[in-house]
Length: 174
Image (cartoon, rainbow, N blue to C red; front, side):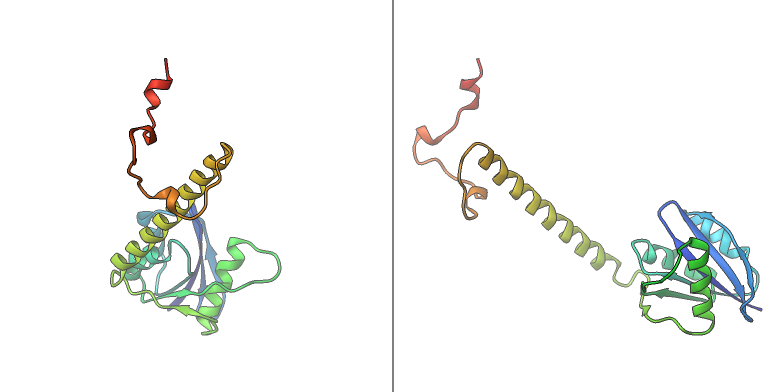
């Protein structure tokens, strides 16, 4: 008894949809997006389980969490769909594509193999974005005071050449 499960994944909830090996829609139901609830939902489905969901922010976590509880797990590349959209329709569509082996793009997920590298890459991209945002903010503060700044000298630490170049903010408050 083969069961094909397509899952529409969102931050707050997931919608698994189950079809039989002959393509008959069996059931669909919303589940909270939390590891324990998803594992329980998948374990309740009888038979050999084949699970598919789309690539997204949570796909690695879902792969690692659910792979011990299914016979096959596939992460599909996101494809554009036409017509009305709903979680139920998307989940059944994914399950049917998995059943007939018609997935356009399958994404390789190696559980825990490159997790550390992916996290470091994500941190690097976040830090670069934060630095660019702060640099833009600094330049805009200068521009708001009528000071024209060019180049990157504004971001580098400067040693005062004379005592007059040092700003004493405390002396201006009184």
